[in-house]
Length: 98
Image 1 (cartoon, helix red, strand yellow):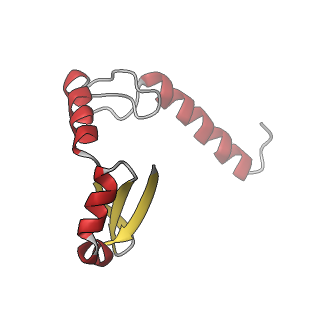
Image 2 (cartoon, rainbow, N blue to C red):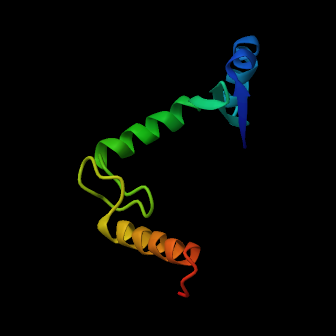
Image 3 (cartoon, rainbow, N blue to C red):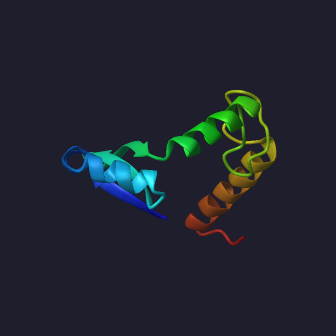
């Protein structure tokens, strides 16, 4: 299976072909508008599976996939690791040695 990216105009012209490719498991298609992703066409079964996971785990860390409080993007451990890396990059850019 491949991930494809197409413009909204191309999606409009070829929507039947896109649905066929997605239905047969040949591709997930990202539709862009002015170069920015606005939608993804995926098989219905895939979407249903994601919905079931989200119902069981309403909030997961976007880094390690652990459960996190609703509204959080990442768990505390991943936030701390990210912050340490960010600080190291800042120090490096300022010419400090690690």
